[in-house]
Amino acid sequence: MSVTKDDFDAWKEHPVTLAVMDKLRTHIREAEVRWMQSSWGRGNADPLILTDLRARGLVLTEIVNLEHEDI
Image (cartoon, rainbow, N blue to C red; front, side, top):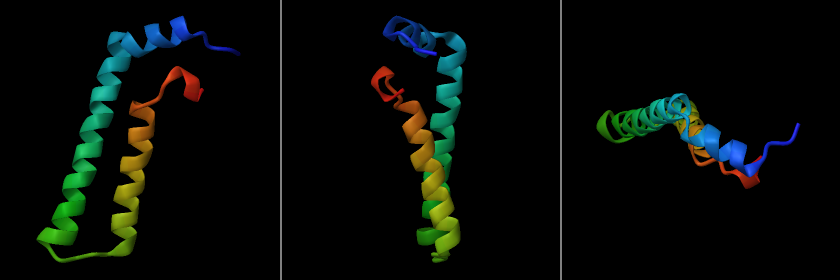
């Protein structure tokens, strides 16, 4: 199935999509805060926790920044 640029743009501006993207941005910020609290605040640089938080942030950022050309 091919998605046209017009369809993609309409989806990207749909209120449900906007709400989902806002929630994903919140999760990105939460991962960043948890990273700082864990590594800087508590001095706990557990590589598994930090890798998990970074991976979540990166994946969610990719979704939020998705463009028509990416699909």
